[in-house]
Image (tube, rainbow, N blue to C red):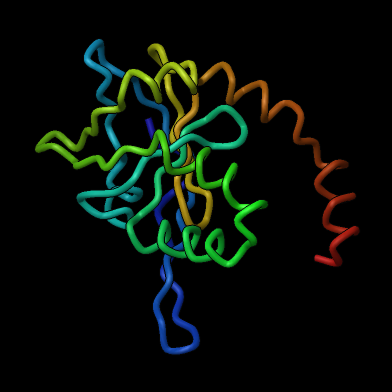
Length: 157
């Protein structure tokens, strides 16, 4: 099932960048494979990185988007960066799309994100997130228009 649309491409400063958007519901099979929607897959590429996300989900980064994150982390003092590097890179997996449009999520990553059957894949601008459906619904319940407005006001958006 698909909700939301496709990724958007923007051109600026001589470079094209991708904005991943949308929300898609799928199942994870007993072998740990999950279908990646075409609109997300097109922008992540046939091979990309899946790693732990900070909210109990998994994050999927194209090779170029992960390079941006890695460069930012390298720019930090080692004393500040090492925990971030350990979190994002130690359990990361290089995955490849199969002929059916699926990727295999490692058992360790499935366990981290509590992925069992129903999953939600969301576009998050520069990366995609893979959520357990129930956990996703809990997170979304806490995002109210009032909370969004307050945050937008704080940052003058």
